[in-house]
Image (cartoon, rainbow over all chains, first blue to last red; front, side, top):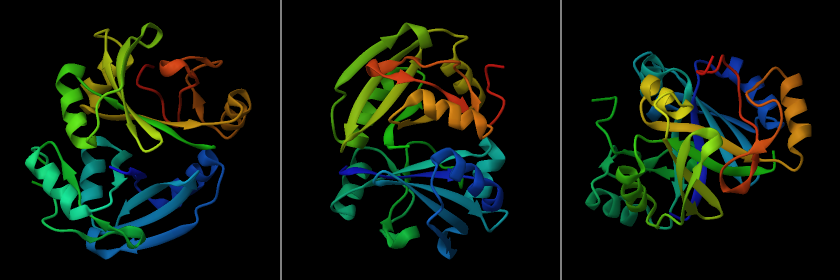
Length: 124
Length: 124
């Protein structure tokens, strides 16, 4: 793991949450982006050289909508930057982590991503 | 907010979780510390210039134990570093955030801390 890349926070809707996080972080949202492949609308904030990403579901049966239904609004994931994503996926799979993507795919902010978990994922 | 300081993750017990996070983060736990004032045992990992903190409750009715009972193991808080904690507490209180500490207090890793939330905290 090279560094913490961002923290992803599930929210019911961006229009309510963006002003809250602008107050909290004392900085404006610098980008909103829709990611069709993940059924989310996202909003980004910079904190030092890191990012906070808010995620609103665009699909009532999407991953973020189901996360909120089960756990409420809150932190959904931590993203780490790595120098070689495919090598890191192999290392984590061998260590027993469950990869939710078989291969790297395009996520928000033009990044290649792979989600993983230690538990049976909510989507199953 | 100057920067992300650490991510705090509630776990049932450190002895099970430390090896998992050592595998995940590909680095060893560099410090374990008990914080009596918060009824927790903590374990720290370095990722780039940031920290991941695992928190195990030492009190079955402690904040971390109640968090796990309600939501399961998972991310409990994000800590931000600020240049002037008392000024930041004043700013957040005026913006409508709920401060869980009336004044800065000593937390883990020899840091002055103040916890806050937007919602009615679990402890109430």
